[in-house]
Image (cartoon, rainbow, N blue to C red; front, top):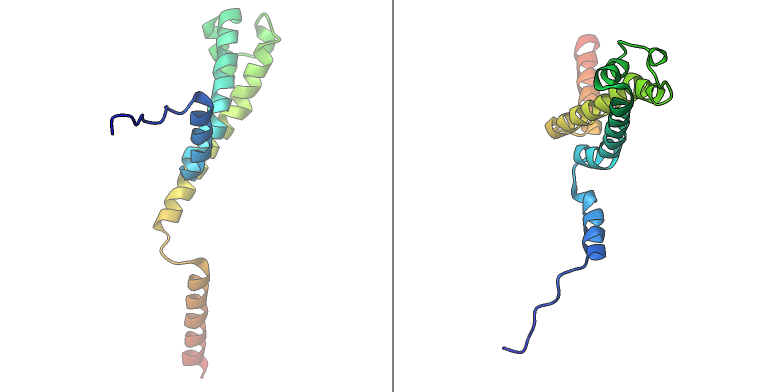
Length: 134
């Protein structure tokens, strides 16, 4: 029919709302990376860029990895959070990602439920006790 128009494309609010609801379709690892790790990484990069501009890129890197103390650079105030991020937050971020990845691999390779495995072990232990002592 020539008079029928297609519906208008969804607005920005509708697209963002649809994207936000679709996060549940992601795997646990992807959801964690998108909603937890990405904001932390953005804060880290902003802090590193701020320190790179203020104290120099080499000094910022050295403070980040713990080669230099934040007390050895000037200005010290932005170097302390960078040092703490390099010491605590980055290893936690990497550990969290590895933990989610390992958990996902274990769950994909699990073929039996834990209760089934425990029942099988109980049956086997009862059978071995009966055959040995009875």
